[in-house]
Length: 322
Image (tube, rainbow, N blue to C red; front, side, top):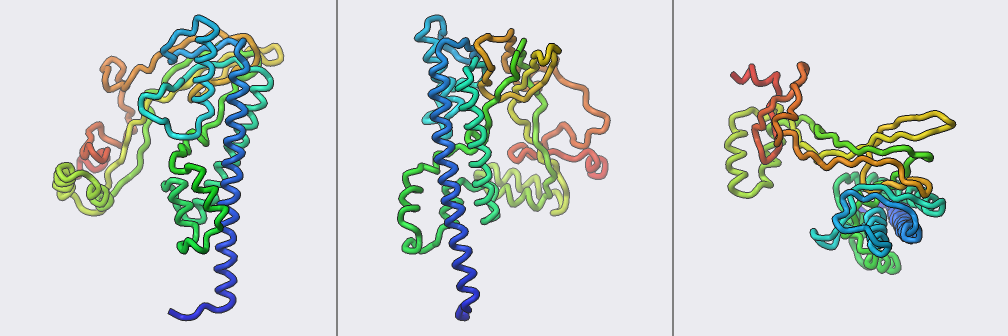
C-alpha cells in the first residue's frame, strides 16, 4: 500500500471531521427532540380539565383520576421515542385530546424538532449510503475504527443515549393537530393498503438463503423452475390504515377534509366535536362479503406463488408459462 500524500491526508482529516460534526448535529437534534417530547407530555397532563375521547383505551374513564390516567397514557403514546418495554405495554392507538393553546404550541415545537431530527438521520445515511441500518449501527460504522481516535466526550454521550432502543417511526411521526372549530370526526379504515415491487428470480433465490432450513429448501425447489431474469411481484398487504373524515367551519363556511390519522390527535379548544368510531374490520380476505371486484387493468395475479417471500406471478407471465 502506497504512502498517502499530504493532500490525501488532509482530505481524510476533513472527512473525519465532517463525520464527527454530523454525529454531533444528530445528538443535538436528538436532545431537542427529547426535550420537546417531555414538554408536550407535561402540557397534555396539565390539560386535565379538557375532554378526551380514546376509543381503544380499555379501562374506565368515569372519574377524574381515571381520566387523568388515560390522558397520561395518551401523552406517553404520543411522545415516546423508544421501543415499548414489553409486548404487553398498553398503548393508546387512536382518539382525540382537546388541547389548550400551550399544548398546541408544544406540539408544533415537537413537530419541528421531529423534522430537524429526521434530517440529521438522513444526513448520516447519505454519508454511509445506508437506508435500513439502525442509528446505533450506522454511527458505529461512521466513527473511526480505532477507538483511540474517537472523541472521548462524544463516545460517552453516545453510550448514555441508548440509541439501540430508538424507534425511528415514533421519532418521525408528527403529532396530528386538527383544524380549529372542529364539528365532527369519523374514523374509517383503508383495507387495501399494500406495498409492491418487481423481484427477479435471482434476487428471490438470494432472499431465500436467509430462510429457515425447511422453508429454504421448499422455496429454492419452487424457484428452480424459473430463469434468473424471470420477474415476480413482491406484494405485502399492510395493516389496515386508519383515516378520518373531518368537518369544521372556517370563516362561516362548513368544510370537509379527509386525513390519514395515526395515533391520538389534538383538537384545539375545550369542546369535543361529534365523534364516530369504527373498529378495525380486519383483513378483507377474512370476509368474502367485503371482497372487491378485481380491476380490469390488474397486473398481478391473486395467487401467492412463494408465500414466505410474498411473491406473486405477473398476469403477463401466466399465459407464457402455460
